[in-house]
Length: 66
Image (cartoon, rainbow, N blue to C red; front, side, top):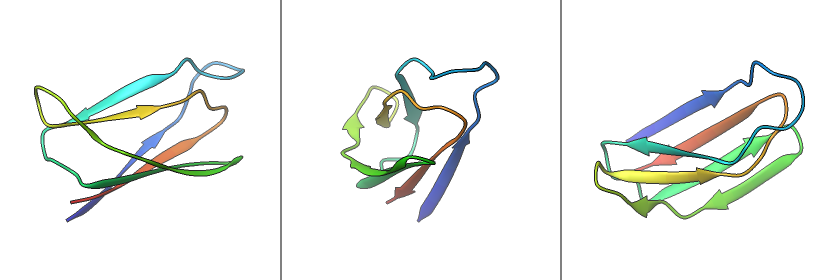
């Protein structure tokens, strides 16, 4: 299974770091921003997979693979 989460900030400037939580467990994740992309290791959380996303501006996409 694959999934993607699109993140769009509604304020100007960089966001604060955030953590996304998903019920399904994912093995791989990649954060894609206008500045580049970075592989992220999903962490096991109470509800499933947690993905840490660093600061970004304008747009970010989190691509997930089960």
